[in-house]
Image (cartoon, rainbow over all chains, first blue to last red; front, side):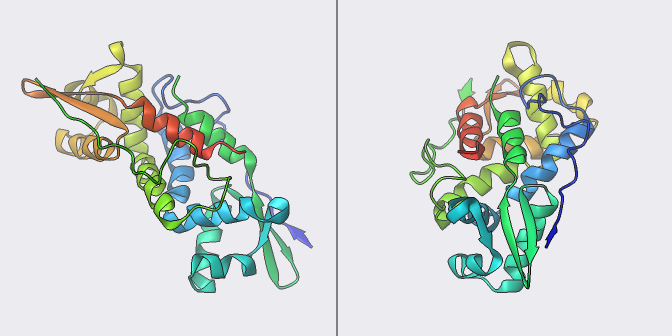
Length: 116
Length: 116
């Protein structure tokens, strides 16, 4: 069993950075744009919501293919983007990967977008 | 003086839809992806944060060009994307457009992304 770790958040993207606080510098804007870009796709939003709604808040890639109606390579590609952005965790067990929500990233992006 | 109105939120993107609640249907996923896509760009995030930090929470396009270091047509293009997605309001006065935050859209997207 291998647990893949997500990279720690960049120093400039702290808990307290908000879109409507102090003007963002270029580094902060790039950090948050990267996470938002991973989420800014209908299929990826559906995949995240399917993982969240799955029993145990964890889903096998094999559980996600039918509900989104796309082929396995396409679903794997979208899941990789979500893992790389720190939105989902991936854990490999046997031939399948299991995905769970990285709550901390969603909390950070929700706090970032909350109006002051 | 002309005030441009943003379109009302689509019926499927209600106040209570969350990413980690019930699985999203395709329409909900498309509505939220559209707003997230508008935000998922470093320059556009900086423009929103500059408008929010400006005196009176409103900024003239002329105030935004120097801080982001891009030409006026490029800045206008990014601002149009933010207005079209309902993230910023635009009001024309004379030759300049003035931009302010559409708090409701940011609140809706922050609530959508908040973990259950």
